[in-house]
Image 1 (tube, rainbow, N blue to C red):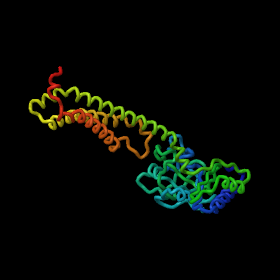
Image 2: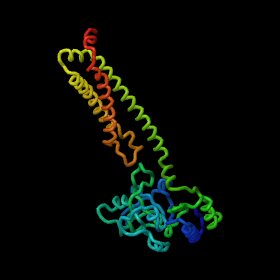
Image 3: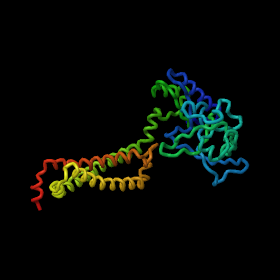
Image 4: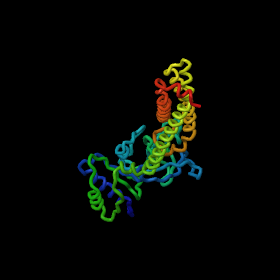
Length: 334
């Protein structure tokens, strides 16, 4: 965090830190932000495309981030229109901002956002100079929200996080030493890779997803065992009737095929009912999923095929002895 009476002193320290990190061997790009995606929740400000009227409680909101020029390149966020923030977007110059696609669509539907102005607190109207792709700032399972980015050189903020893209990251001790060299009284927060940031943001969802998957596997196995046991038991109870068919001239392959068809028709009906139930209740687990649909045909078809294979085996195995069945013994039984 930066706490200086004169904004110029803060910017001097920021530039010093940027230059020190940039000089580290293996570092390819350096930038900074007031809110790291997936790690910081950020802040919402009221915004309005009507710069002639004051903001009100009914005004829409958008997240705002102060970033160092080069932030989008460092983070791999594509520029869709206009330009990036530049070092010339500094204090004393007209306020500018880069907006994401969601904010561009919501404030200026059907027309280009570049060149438009919007009203926001702390400075008044900003001119849009660029549009960038949406990112899942709050988390991978949350939809992108309207966001605008301002230059740290133009509007410094108290808390800043540096992001380094590097072939080999410097050690935590080296980072601490560079921070202390820039300002001995400057506090330093956590130092970690973006991979760990992403993993931490998904820890709860991953645990619940793994738990849900484990229960789903156990449930599928129990269903498969139940279907197999019921089907096999039903076939065995019908062995006398099957032997009667053999006694009156039926062939073992034809009798076996009839049994398999009957049992599969029952199981197919159950699978279809189960698939409909899965589609109806899928919304209960949608919060655990990212880029995966609860109506995934592959998942539903996979479970259905497994149950059908189990039913097929359970129906066929008891009838495979029909070729050598003791017909007279089965016919004598009550």
